[in-house]
Each structure stands twice: as C-alpha cells, then as structure tokens.
Image 1 (cartoon, rainbow, N blue to C red):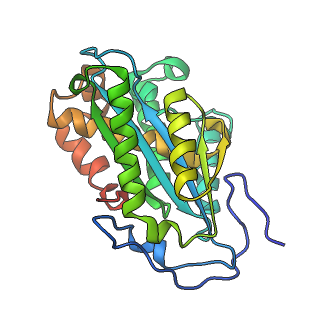
Image 2 (cartoon, helix red, strand yellow):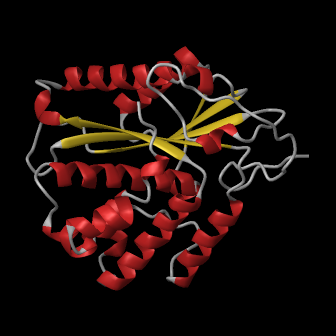
Length: 265
C-alpha cells in the first residue's frame, strides 16, 4: 500500500506514465511536471504570503503571494532528509520551520546567530528548493496602487483566477488537488477556498509551517520575489545587503538559479 511521508509525499514508485501540460493561453509549467503520472495523480499546492492588507507604509510597500506546486508522483524524500540533517547539524530540531525573512534580518529565532551561521542555514533551504522538482508562481502587488483594502483584495483575486484559468488543462489532469495554507490572513483564506473550489473542488487544509518543508520553500520563494522586486525599485536594505554582500551576488547565486522554477504567464 502506498503511504504518505511527512511532507504528504507518497513513498511508492508505482504507476508512472506520461502527463500532458498546459500550453493554453500564456501559462506553461516546467517540463519535469509532465514526465511522471500515478494511477491516482495528486498535486500539492502550498501557499504563503509576505506583507499585510493594512495601509501603504514606506517600509512595507509590497504584498506578495506565492503558489508552490508539487506533483506527488515525484519523490523528494531524499531532499527532505538532507534538509533535516542540515537543521540538526546546525543545532535546530529536525522539524524547525525556517523563516527566510527573519533569518536574513537576524530576528526572532535567529537573533543570536552570527552572519556565517545564518547564511549556512539559508543556503540549506535554498539548496532544498533548488534540487526539488517543484514550480512556483509569485504575484507581486504595490500597495501604493490601491486606494483601499477592497481594491487590493479584488486585484489579487482577479490575477490568481486568471492564472488558474490559463493553466486549467494541466491542473485538471490531476485526479486530486490538495491546497495547504496556514490561514495566516482571512482575505487569503477566503480567496483560496473560493477560487480553488470554483475550479477544482480542491481539498483545502490548514497547516503549520513546521509540518511541511515545502511550505517553508514557499516562504523562501516569497522572500526571493520581494528581494527581486526591491532590486528593481528602491534597492536592498542594509541588513539584506550585508547578508547577500551585493546585488550582483544575490542575482547570480540565488535569483538566477531558481528562475527555472518560475511559471511564466
């Protein structure tokens, strides 16, 4: 019998076959999503966000939401094992949830860590997302463009809806879609339940970041999207510049290597 691993990963290797992928509209998923298929094909979607729905403030001008996709037919248990061993080696519990932004800024759990240790921990999660066969789509919104809360929620809903509709042939090729979100913000909770069930009758589940390494991966993609946006606009903060050394290093060693994970549409 096929079992479920700690990240909801099925641990058998049976029932693999070809799968088509979406080329409708502008959407296109990376090729690794098209290679394997099980008797029951299952797609996991992990959702995380950066920012809040409060009024625009100069120190927090963006709202970002990331959707991370993992075909359960692709086993990533080896990568999860490597990540957990790295956590243990660095003095953390194996189920510690890495939060990328506080790690960069030396906040919360990472306030007592020096720069070298924080970079090492960041790199552990970064290598995990680089080596896993996953894909992601990040939506970036400038809060200054919206006169009120409702307008921003409406725009987010519209853009996510367009993305899902553009990729329907691929997404509907799965027998089951499970959406994982921590219910961090009620606006996103409502959006997730409304949109995913309108298109797919998805199984939407509340999770804790420590339960799933892929949820932490979604958090890192959110952070990378924010950093890329800041590079294109106001530039990095002092703590971000210290962490990544300079903009060139960030682009070369972090943004460019993960570009293949991005779903362009």
